[in-house]
Length: 290
Image 1 (cartoon, one colour):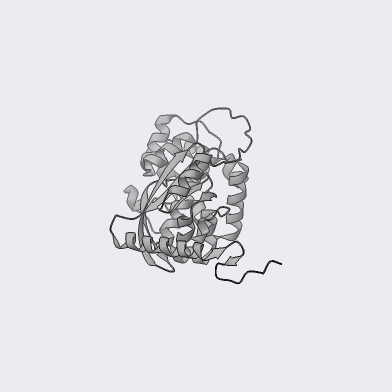
Image 2 (image 1 turned 45 degrees about the vertical axis):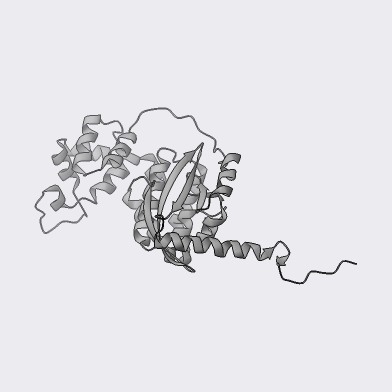
């Protein structure tokens, strides 16, 4: 993460959100000589009922402890939703944080057992969308759900994953906003620093989304994906916290077309597993023993 962003997170967030609100959305008649996207600083200050000088100090990081009333007014002007408003209020929470060591994310043994029994795609992810464990159905759904992959990295950089999602544009926006929400004030977490740095260098789409400072939760939902073998699947997604990790499950509506296709995919993946042994295909000739 850039030093300027981590050192002045409140100012960076206010500036990014200000640029996303059009004068028309704010009820302002725009003139013809506007040089900035969105609202001007003085317009935000006027609508929020604070002085332009004070708002300038907030954006430039000269005042890092505005009152809750000021933040509430800014949230109203910037048209923040509940999650974004909570994020804004959290940026100024005054507390001393001791440096924390990065904790390894471990999958409990009971979750490995659960994965083995589930007959729907299921996997475990960490806070930065690292895949930590998965069952055969998850890998049959997408090889990028194998342990060791990072879901956001795959989504942004892997052409097969891009083709997998029906609405790749929305998926990337949701994932990047969820990452920023998850990071919160852990801006010095080594895994987050590594991932954000890598994606900022390798993905223009990530740089564009990261600059917006969007925040949102990525919990339950429904997605349509294009599987290369069974075709289009409409799947619901649920995320269940287990200790320090997240269990993610995908499932279709019962007796739907997607349900039938998922059952076909399960049968095909089981056939592939039966037809292959650690030494190669099951019908391959084996070396004779002396």
